[in-house]
Amino acid sequence: MLALRLARGAHPLVQLRRLMVAAASAGTGFLLLCTLTYAMEHPGAGSALRLAWCLAPIAATVYFAVAVARTDPGTRPRAGLSSVGLGPGRLMLLAAISTAVACLLGSMLALLFFLHLRGDLSGLPFDGAAAGLLAADKPLPLAAALTLLALVPILASLASALVLRPLPAKTGTGAEPEQDPEGPTPAPGGLPWGVALLAAGLAVETYASRSLHGSGAGSGLPMPGGLAGSPAGVLAGWALTAFGLALAGPGLTHLCGRLLQAVRPGAVRLLAGRVLQQEARRIGRPLGVVCAVASGAYASVVLYAGPRPDVGPLTTLGALLVAGCAVLTLATAAVEARQARSHTTAALLRLGAPATMLRGSAALRAGALASVFGPLTWLVAELAAVPLVG
Image 1 (cartoon, rainbow, N blue to C red):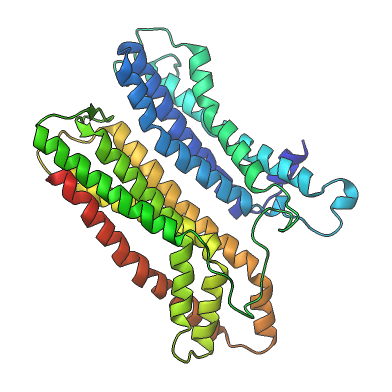
Image 2 (cartoon, one colour):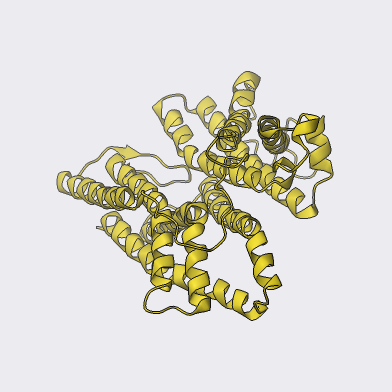
């Protein structure tokens, strides 16, 4: 009940973020239900493979839900809350419940829309518009449908509780402690591993593609939407490449901050560099995920540009879910970073720092990130697309 009261009294922007989580959960739930109906009409290994293709939208939705939970002001520790029984542990539970409620709302909407397109519900426009595609002639296994719809709420609430758990060495939210830009912060340690995974993914993708073309046959994995015959090795290399970019994101962001401060920096460059170094762990990984999604989207465009089948609606929905959740997660992380440095910004303004300096620092940060991550994304996309069209 307390979680519902906090959710009802939240700021409209917070409510909007929760609604976006519900929308992402609804889209993922609809994909899972469509996969279930495909399994009803085509029992066999192909159904399990189609379910595996839903892992990417599930992961993107859970990732976005966790980012929204981290920025929820209703679950942030404040003075006096522990005295009324709202300590860090209780706030973590409230965040998990709020995340589960938002995802459950999306799952319910997905089920209603799915039943409406099947023709099981009447009284609305487009009743049974997709009855032939959604196996309307067969009874829907309710237990299986509810199990699939419960995946996103359960995973999102557990992930939120894990990320926001109180730790002795950190703040009560489990996030990075707030810091003033007084000195450089240690560099994240994931850059070497990220580069190694990126190189390994490209190597695996290239080797698998050459083996496929050399033998003239390969183990194809059918993709929803009409594309078939994608070798498993190429897809595994693609996944390694994406994971490597996400892992290297914080290190690259920290490197951008160091480059901004090189060669006798002024006040604006020094401030921009220090802020990037402090926010490297917070915005670096979402930025790496966005770069991975962008490179994958480019490779997909190159792949579908040839004599291939048209992209189906479910493939389009899945791609939009992954891309949308990645971009929204980055935007949410940027909001979280702005909230974390709000005290520093206020202190600088009290000391007489002009607002133009703060805007110039923000522009420098954006330009530095674009100058590093933009060419990197293009290079990875080009290298990842070569085996697919070879």
